[in-house]
Image (cartoon, rainbow, N blue to C red; front, side, top):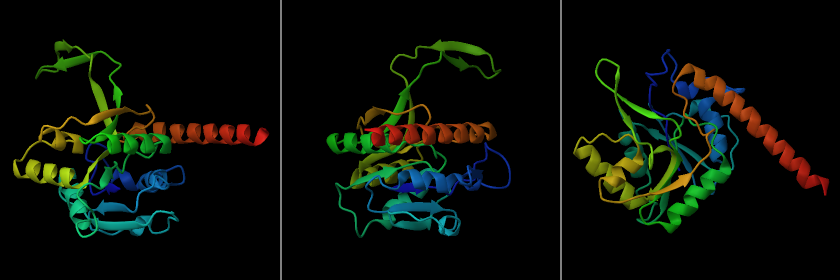
Length: 236
């Protein structure tokens, strides 16, 4: 499992990168890493600006946690993570990539996308169908067209691919200076069609300040759901 966490979060604003902001008693990154623990990964590799995991060192996780130095952009960070696995990963081993700023991932969704990737040679990613009407804007900020939303999905993470395929896709995409907004876009350049796996709407990516409050509400709601499920299991 690779977690790119070297970004500055320029859209969020502020001096502190969003992955280190407080969220429900911990940092955003710590909450995210806790969600990935127990997903069956052999290790969780976190790419930070300096390769230092000091801000996550107090976490007690079942899965081994390792740090590596990130790059100037997401694709380079993930590529560095893949290279850090070069001596231990086999070509067909599955590698999952998850955003550091998605702290509300459900474990069941994580397991589902990994299972889908194991059954699909092109890999798989969590996503949600577009529900709102989509407008295309012109340079003046006015509506230029209404886009048909049928067949449109919003990509989430984790995104899961075979080690060698993802490494090749990122290397070629970076060399071509392609716009790689996620790992799936790199793999798609090779002609592959990854499987879309329905994720939950609460698997949000923290991008703007108001997203922090929404994530806090989602985490509380998920904790309440788990408490109710536990109560139901122990009642009988």
